[in-house]
Length: 266
Image (cartoon, rainbow, N blue to C red; front, side, top):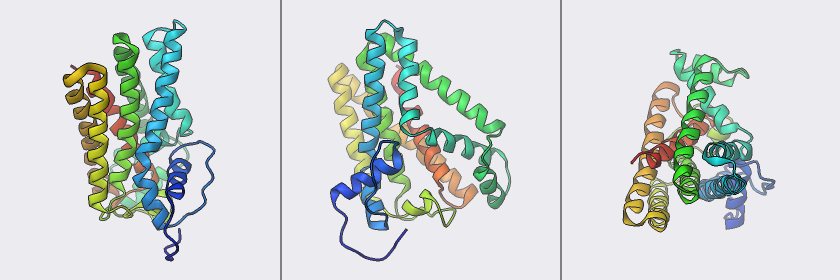
């Protein structure tokens, strides 16, 4: 990725970067430099919103066709996996293998780069997907709006966790890959402002679905999702020395799962 100064990226360049790197949607990247990465990571929650709304829409279709809450939950959980080609789930599994190996950073990073998935990765994927489907099924049983809200909030929260992980001061663990491309590109203040905006919009959506309690519950879900990702980020920094593309995937999945589970509780 080029560090050579050039003309400031346009909002369209930033959006293309966000959708082109964080989704499998057919978006052509027009610029690949640090300035564009900064804008792209600030736009990451918008990519998450599109993924979340698509997941909610498919869940609604399944319910309309009489599929029931459980099948709707499975369909909703499948959409983000499809729209990212499973990269975030793969990153979660690889990060689990690296952390579970208890090996030094260099060896753990080498394990994460291997194409196969070890036992820690398999178990983490299994329980993550089971928890997602169980939480979404419980929410859909209360009504489509509750499941749809969870899908949208999870999508936005998951990508906002990536914005926070791209802030200045968080190093890359490797000199190559997506982690190196976006690490340290976003000012800490801008990342925190993005998180505050995501929390506020989540609260507004929760209020629209179930009033003041919904606003509080949904804001808490977003905050706890971001907090879960931050705890994982700190652990990965200690173990690996920084972030990688796999760590970014793990952060997104962890934040989204935590948000859905909180919404399913209470």
